[in-house]
Length: 271
Image (tube, rainbow, N blue to C red; front, top):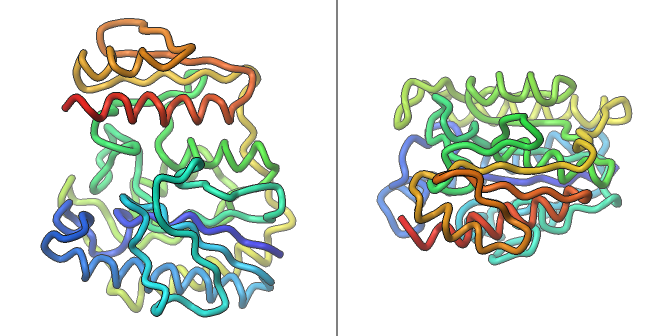
């Protein structure tokens, strides 16, 4: 049983502000330690459940957050950026299950630190379904036949997960009390919940199903200002629908995902 972990930071217990998530800023080192502890809990739970291989993709910001001297030595860590697959780099059909740890809910939701890849995106839809990072990445995993077995984060993301991935185990580590506030479990309690959920997720893994993308999927992105949409529309194959919205469609979801990342990168130059 091979497990792939996409590890973000904003959904970690106790993480409540950008000053905690941006390297070099106040309390980043604390958030980094909390993130690492939760990832280790997921790794431990996976092995307890019967995993033979665990690979962790550091998926937050510059993707250099997880210190190798602090990670469970049984796991491998993929770090650094840019990576072609970003938060799902290296995920292939070789894996049996995917975990999403430290995730947050989609842009526009009341989740603590909610966003979708970055703050240029107001809303993203795949063939009419609103999605955040969880949905975008779960569809990518689905193209390889890999189900998402575990998600961790706050209560708002739990509701999002239940609608999108009803078969996935969920470890709620905090409740959103505002964009920059949450009611969190203590670090040890959060890790214990993740460890237990990860173990069960692996034991149940053979019965889970992947999230398959729609036929001929398309993505619509609503940006925060017209200049961002204008820049995003430079992406080959993109169509600007209105002053803030850009669309891209393709028969292959992986091309849709790559186009999404391209458009968001282009838009990021215009705040």
